[in-house]
Length: 340
Length: 226
Image (cartoon, rainbow over all chains, first blue to last red; front, side):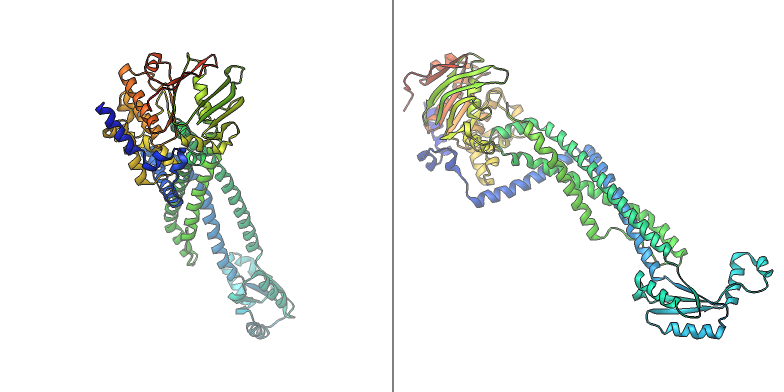
């Protein structure tokens, strides 16, 4: 009897006075919007933390998944960096594009010198250099190893040459081509040769490389989606009983989905971070030999790495990929788990 | 609170679990649902929880017609109904406290509210000192009481129980039933499926008896306390 009284008192504590008066079902317990929002945010925080802890609790398995994602992301990232570097190098060369003016045979040294001065005074020309036929022959003799053959010639077959370097501000291909065409019309000039074809070819190859990288990145991104999707599928399977109970006590689909979306996000993000580490250590490894190489070419070329923005983009993209991978799987899998 | 109008449930494959069942349980009343196993008790409870839908007829719970309920509204119904399962359906990867808190977290209660309500519910079932324990370390009777705490923590207007005393000895069973009576006394509508006829006979509440999917008794005066 006393026990009964005690229980009744406890029950009184359990039921608020308002609840005792009004027995309208759960509607009487509606919480305020602000409370709900605060609770929603704190639930997100908690789920994010909880799903991260779940990954950390099984470090070996999580690391393996992250590494697979990292390798898939590091490959296109490295290619992207390589292309950026090729572009940086070739833009330096573009500045050094030069026009060779081969002079007609009858043009004398003094005429050539006058011509050189008039060209040097033009807009869009940075510097000019006159190479006389004799100087050209001497250089050819020294560098080609055909000295004996040259000795047998009656006269010097080489024409005079004026090398024109366009101004840096005018390095656009169109401007340089225009200058070349103008110079070609000069009466003393036999041939104005702009050796840019190989540069254009390099640009085309770089563009091809860019597209191949994009295609590869696309395929690998699909691969990452599948990896994450499959991992999430297993995670869902291992928490099946929890999902059933949550659904039984009124959990919405969004509530059930949330931890798995976070799990996908964490997998993607950790893969992105690991990819970043892989790429950066690769760059570090290459830095010394590339510096040596560029010194031997008298270049001050610096290897371009991943900038702050590029790094952030990589992490964001990786996290987004993880979220998407989880999203694609989770809806279908959770619909299949219904309390029976 | 619960109204069944000529409800039939036919499963795929042709088995008819419920045939033309009609009854009404007013707010704040307590009923026992009895019948041999396979008579349709579980199906009837599943219809109230929208785990199954009626083939014909109407199921109305708390003024809501469940036959016409959109799938996205199912969670709302389940939040308003507390359910005690025969096999507890507790999660063994978390503490007693976290098990009981689950419906509150789903419903979006604030942190402080959750703590207050969980402790009140655990106190009610006499397990306040076990809140940090993992339910797997508890006895069957204690696990069942954790399940009851979880069912009532959200203060539902309707409490369902499926064989809540299934594996318990007579004394524990009586204690559990006594708990349910107390919820009835504060205005909660209670429906308990049980085949423990000896226990039910000692309690002054009306029976709903199912036989082969048909309701054979829904009568007798409710002469329960108050």
